Amino acid sequence: MAIVDLVMPKLGESIVEATILKWLKQPGDAVKADETVLEIATDKVDSEVPSTTDGTIEEVLFKVNDIVPVGAVIARVRTATGASEPAGTTNIHPIAAAETKAPAQTVTTPIVHAMPAQPSNGQQHSNRFYSPLVLNIAGSEGISMSELEKLQGTGNEGRVTKKDILRYVEDKRHGRAPVSNPTVTTAASFDRPAMNIPNNTPASYTGNAEIIEMDRMRKLIADHMVRSKQTSPHVTSFTEADVTNMVQWRDRIKASFEKREGTKITFTPLFIEAVVKCIKKYPLINSSLEADKIILKKDINIGMATALPSGNLIVPVIKNADNLNLVGLTRQVNQLAENARSNKLQPGDIQGGTFTLTNVGSFGSLMGTPIINQPQVAILAVGAIKKRPVVIETEQGDTIGIRHMMYLSMSYDHRIIDGALGATFLSAVAAELQNFDPSREA
Image (cartoon, rainbow, N blue to C red; front, top):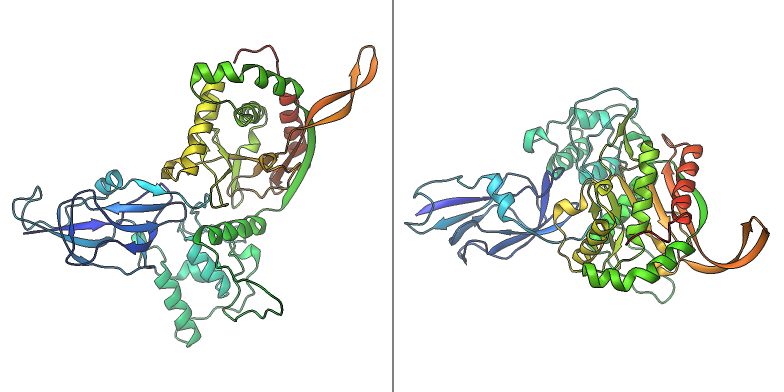
């Protein structure tokens, strides 16, 4: 007999822990190689973890809802003598093998980056990472960042885990933990402030109502949105564009394009193409902010907000969009959108975005005030394209014509993007769309 350890796989660069959602196998159950043993969830994806060998589940080491660091042993599988693993060997399942054999299945959450927490006073601390859950608990319990920095974590590489922070909270309540000067936790206390989670006191309803429990994805979206508003001072600028040439060009070539390329061309790749051109002119839009450091991104990775059948949103990312032509952008847009709707996105598909585009017009909205997708500094919303009578300036004088018009709005982080740059970039995107060449090749 041999005992093989099944470890928590790493499903992405910034993912350092995962929550166990469901055990599909219990001690004593037979399991085959690549057969799913349990379902796990991270801030970004829900995934299935398969067995790496044939055998019988010897023991499971964690319960449902436990948060487990990447690389930790989560279960042990007893194999028969003569199996591919040497008899009597333990810990022979490396993390690398887990990463290879654990395909992501169901993507259910928006992008939430794990970032090193920074103090609000600008002083440098250690580059310790705190998960959103730990920061949420700290924020709701009034624990300052300086207290967090002093905690000794039991997680991977000394990280503070959920158990560590809850133990500290309990000790503090009973006077067993050192108490620093009382402070009021504000949005400035954390680089990624926690969502204000209401207490468990039942609400009082006087009318006819139905109580609907938020699903996990909706809770994460809510938390992400609140943190974004608390982190970045949002400013939104608006403009409009005459996209008649673009609309007529697409109407003219879409049938031949689909026949030739085997995929439909929508407006989204045309919008992304214009955004990429303008980011090259105004690179500060393609950045992020960490403490007092501006991180200027050289890669242009465009996230596109995509509606899921459940009504929730996910933001798959087109990597290196500046290296793709229109056909390449179209294929990427369609493939990512289809994978999102069919729950086939991989962890890498929703990581690394540097700028986000959301098409509120696809739902009939004329314009919107989008919330920044942290840690990015800007997000562009395009509204519905509508025919309207507008004044057209010509050499012979002004005239009124029926044109295809569209509103654009962009929210940006006013800490580093001033109104002048934000408005200039937005106007540049509108100009790219308005000056679309109707004679270009598809």
